Length: 116
Image 1 (cartoon, one colour):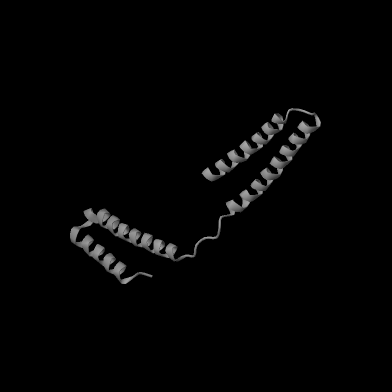
Image 2: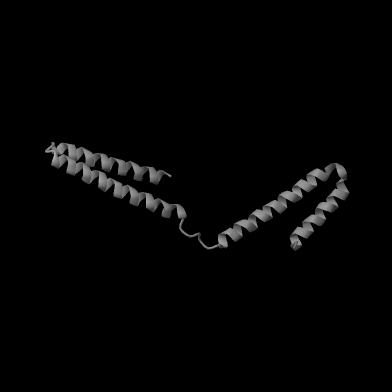
C-alpha cells in the first residue's frame, strides 16, 4: 500500500522524466529509489524500537554448564592433589601449588568468558 507522500513523489518523478527526457531517467529513478529506501529504513527502525526486549541470551545459559563442570573438576583435582600430598607425607607446598594451579585455570576461564 502506497502512502500519499510516496504516490506524490512517484508522480513527480514521472513528470520530471517527461520534462527532462530519457537521458535523465536513470538519475530520476535512483533518486526516487533512495527516497523509498530511506522511508523503509525509517519504518524498520520504528518497528524495531517498538518491539519488546529480547529474552536473555541462550549463550549465557549454555555457559552455566561449563562453569559447573569446571567447578566440579577443579574441586576434584584440588582434593585429590591434597589427599595424595597428605598420604605420601610430602611437603604441603606441593598441595599449595596444586590449588594455585586450580585457581589459575579458573581465573583464566572466567577472564576468557568475559572477553567473548
